[in-house]
Image (cartoon, rainbow, N blue to C red):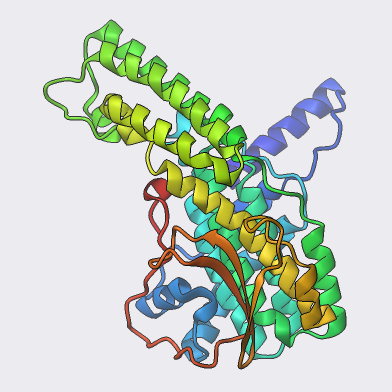
Length: 396
């Protein structure tokens, strides 16, 4: 932060000396988020870690009250960022990390979980409008996460959005009619996510370009840095064959293009595409097997994201117009037929025909509106089981 301020002062001084006038800067949400990251506590005690991992399920109590106060400053900064449309992380993806792990992603997930704990505290205190606004801000945060170039940023956008959507669905039945209409308007105003193919054709191209430069240097020096071998999960000795790795990069670019085409293919016609992609990966060298993983799961993860957003919009409309509104919903994964409606004791559940490959039972993608009265409150100290992510999704 100090370096940023110093840079701004230097630019200001040069402009005054030269008489130059630059156009006013475009507001950038990323700057607010970086401030939120800076303000996030560096260490959490065991109770805080348990609560953050529980997110919206964090039980009421003194520990949760203390945590909400502890993270209040970064949460306010996050909400200021969510109020801005433009978000540029200004990350040199090729130079940052070969896997495309943009440095803000881990911090965004921590911020999301902390914001969900705060939102649940608002709900329990009957501050429903504050809770709804904070959860909508997390939806905006998700979209800003996806403004990066790496495929990993799109997968994490999906994870953040799913986290917010499930909390919003649980909260929505408690909202008034006017609050529901306001929520529906805010949800509808969100632009759709960027197509997955955009990330594959841009972010993955940057990654292969970076790797080509590294391999060229290895060829010129006659050495292969151990840290590069470790990064690529390759053995240090004997040193990897550069020509073979360069050939793998050519194959990987071709495979990424096939994955991009598969993502643009209607779901019903993807099976053949995925079989061909899996065959290409199986025939390729070790580098491809490391860098191209879980294609089917990644594609399903993105489809699940789109499906959950549609379920949220449909469910809010049912809450506004009544159960009869279910007939007007459209499940794009079931030939446009209505979503399946299941009445619950304190709400309802909507289901799609889309299979949820992240679920243990691989059942349908579903969304519960209202708190499940049969769900036991989380036991303090019990291990938390996170949702099953794609293998290259990163650590929670």
